[in-house]
Amino acid sequence: MIFILNLIALYFAFTSNHTDGVYWGAVLPALYAIIVAPHALIGRTDIPLPRIAKILADKWENAEDLTEYIAKYWMALAYPTTSWKKQRNSVILYLTSFLLGVVYFAKEMFAGGIFMFVVGYILYQMSLRVDWPRSVYTSPEFRDGSDNEFARKEWELAAMSIVAFADLYPDDKALNNSAKEISEDADVKPLLTRYRHEAFGGAG
Image (tube, rainbow, N blue to C red):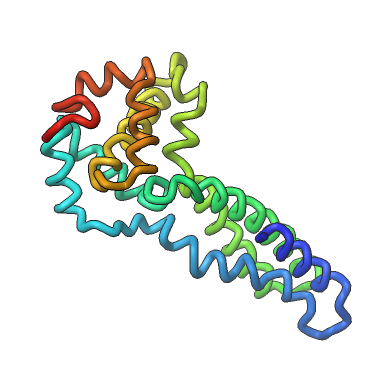
């Protein structure tokens, strides 16, 4: 939907004879950056951090690290079925923003160009974060981590955070199914043995 709306807006932006027509393509990226991106970038949680820390402390040795990671990537973890769509949308729109920024500078519309570069940067940052834990978990490079110990550590945190997030919403079937699937990963099982106080799905 975003892709189609963006194409329509760009078409009118480049073909309209209206004085302000060139700005029409900027509306969708700007709105996305203002309305959607802050939730992904600020790390705003739906549960108070002390409460998250307490729940995880009962189940995880590394609860502090997981609390920080979950807070940072809350949107990605809370909306696993739509986070990849938001990532795709943010990629489409940050590319659009940078394109329009170049066009505006070429037309000597410097204020508009600067604004679109700022919007593009915000959306670029969003594209990196909005589906980060699952992108890391499914990445062979992060999983392997043979050439980069930090990549492997990031993979471990991403995998454990997906499992730990289900602890915050024990009645959410989708989150628990996702966590169960990951907990059965042969590379994740040793992490759960080391850091988790109980088997996933066990009684508290």
